Image (cartoon, rainbow, N blue to C red):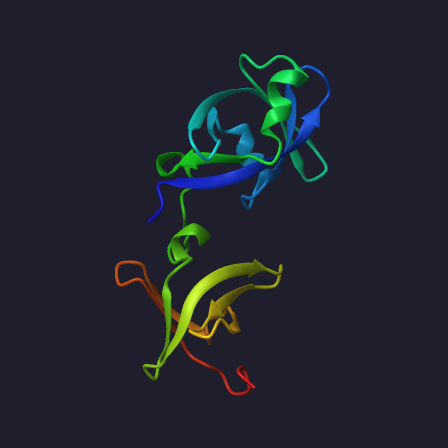
Amino acid sequence: MVDMLRVGVIASTHGIRGEVKVFPTTDDVKRFEILKEVILDLEQSKITLKIEHVKFFKNMAILKFKGMDSINEVEKYKGKDLLVSREHAVKLEENEHFIADLLGLRVITDKGKVLGILDDVLQTGANDVYVVKDEQGTEILLPVIEECVLDIDLEQNKILVHIMEGLLD
């Protein structure tokens, strides 16, 4: 399991007083109202930033960080991820999982056939779709519905699926 979870990406600056527009990668943009701090991922290092205030515009969160008071201080962070530690992540309901924890799991059918590795999760609105890559690099798309995804076992690093008739045609 990963220790840090991405909650957003700095899309651009907002005004000249150090605010940034953040594209949320969390299910609920309003979660930024609860956060007191985020971790800025600079690849080689990480910086903890205290959130001074939050406002919202369309589907974006506009954040102001303490100690960053000008556009010059924040514009270099465009495109950078904002993370939270697992302890500050939202609490999941039973049978819910963070996408980051699922990526890389082996996907196996209920008949014992290894389909491949979970490579991506597409969020379509109606239901998520798992993108599984087989050994040849071919993508297999599986709907995340009860009839198809039977079990997710993080300890065994596997997802058990049932291939419905016509799904792989």
